[in-house]
Every structure is written in structure tokens, then in C-alpha cells.
Amino acid sequence: MEQVQRILMDVDTGVDDALAIIFAVKSKKLHIEGMTTVFGNVDVKQATENTLKVLDLAQPYYKIPVAMGADYPLFRPRREAVTAIHGINGLAGYELPATSRLPIDESAADFIVRVVNERVNDLTLVFTGRLTNLAIALAKDPSIAQKTKLVLMGGAIKVPGNTTPVAEANIHGDPEAAHRVFESGIPITMVGLDVTGKAKFSETHFHQLMTGITDEQAELKAFMDHIFTFSFEASDRLNEGKYRLMHDPLALAVVEDASLVQTEDYYVHIETKGPLSSGATLVDFRRPQLRSNASVCMQVRAEDFLQHYIHTVLS
Ligand code: RIB
Ligand code: CA
Image 1 (cartoon, rainbow, N blue to C red):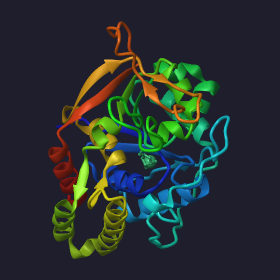
Image 2 (image 1 turned 90 degrees about the vertical axis):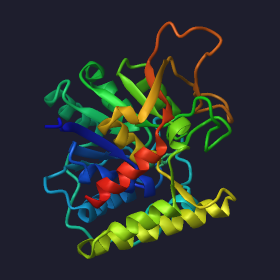
Image 3 (image 1 turned 180 degrees about the vertical axis):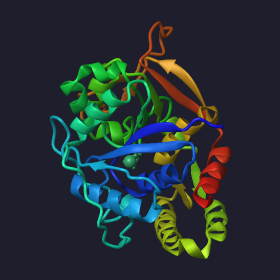
Image 4 (image 1 turned 90 degrees about the horizontal axis):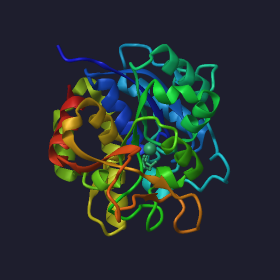
């Protein structure tokens, strides 16, 4: 029997975070020990509300505690939310029903410290937003870096950024937090734009998904219909064609099945200064990599991933 992996997800729920949560709940190979929320696509209050409502939609058969986290970067003001990509509420303007789920009475950072210490070497942190909560958790208990591992969606090595010419949104949103995490010694798998930029969920994938969803999943179908249609229009407006980049779901899929990607070990430096360069994930390619702090995903079997995503959601 396949081993089930315990994960703790940190999200800024957002459209693609929502797609990642649905995938993780439906996955038979992942068990979500808890979720933490952070500002990013929306403020943390909205991210928390969205997370709780998306959990209702995904209907996990087990309990998933949700802890609210940081609403600001460590040392700088928060940037405006990108409503063109995620809509005014982070979920493309879609109004999910009110939820009776509540966040737990523990901060995200305290929750991370506690769960990592309860599950030493038996937990993967999966971060699909800013790294602020983890930077705070590491400041509270630096030893957690030796007790767990991290898979993160963020960064861009050989491709341009999506927020500035060189910076990806999750790293750009709190570079000081990212710097602390990358220098902490925690084992990192970086799922950045080098691979997520190739994970394009097209109209063909959308039709496959919609055709497969049964009538018992009418709410899920309506939600998927809305957010993919919104995403296709948004990408079309940017003259890029109709698709949805599956940034955050790919990070979850890589936890499930590392063979979907090829990685290269690099020492990734996080740039924290400069109006254009802040948030860049830099590798010094002039020299051989004598040490590394991250396994960076550089190639992806994109179609296999997209098919796996669809089949998991339909399962
Ligand atoms: O750059 C992509 C990332 O930024 C994703 O995690 C998305 O949800 C946004 O936060
Ligand atoms: Ca995200």
C-alpha cells in the first residue's frame, strides 16, 4: 500500500491556493495535519475565511485545524492585492456559502512549531504563499529546521519573475522572510516559475474536468466553472491566451510524486534590496555549486501533472 504523507499547508487563498487545497483534500496520498494562513493574494482575514470555505467545499472526511497567521511582511508594508488575477475576494469574486468552521485559537507560527515538534521527521511543510509564518516560527524555535522539510511554491531561477522582471510574487511579497527561511538550514524543494510557468491548465483540460464532475458535486462544479472561466478571461486580457497557471497545485503534486519534476541542487540567494531586484532568487552560475540550500525544480512533466490533477479532483 502507498505511504500517506503528512503535510502542513500554509496558504494565502487565492484562486490557485484554492485549487491546491481541493487537490490535497482529495488526494489519497496526503493527510493534511493542519493549515496556516498568511496575507498575500488577499489580507489574512480574507485568506482565512476563503480557506475555511474551500475546506467546506472540498469536504475532507477528517478534521483539519486552521490557524491564522501574519497579515504583513516582517519589515515592510504589504503590497496591494492583485485583483485582476484573484478577484476582489481572492476567489475570483465567487461567493461560497457561509461556513461554521472557525480558526483555532493559536497563531500560525505557534501551530507550526507545535506540529513540527509533535511529528519530528514525519511532516512536510507545503508553503504556497509568503514565507512570513515560517520565518516567525523559525525565530521562535530554530530547531524545527532540523525536524522537518519544506516544499514551497516560489521563486524563479532561469525565467523572468511575475511581479518584477526578476522576482516571483511569493518571494517578492516578503523577501526578508524568504531570506531567513533559505538561510535556516531547512531542507527545501523549490517549485518556482521555471516549472509552474509550464503547468498551463487549458480550455481542453477544463472541458475534461467539467465533463467528469458528477451531479453530486454540483457546488464544486459551479466553483470550478467560475474560477477557471475568470482565469481564462484574465490571462486572455494579458494577451497570453486562455489558460490558468497551476502554481500552487503543482507544489502539492510534487510532494505526492517527486518524479513529476527534475531538480537541480543550487545555493539560492534571496535579494532583499533594490526596487527592481528585491525578491529575486539568485544562483551564481559562474561557479560550480559546492554547497546548496535547495533542490530546485527545473523540468516538469506538465501534461502528466495536469492529468493527475484532473483525476485526483474527480476521484
Ligand atoms: O507567483 C505565484 C504565486 O503567487 C501563487 O502562490 C499565487 O497564489 C500567488 O500567491
Ligand atoms: Ca498562493
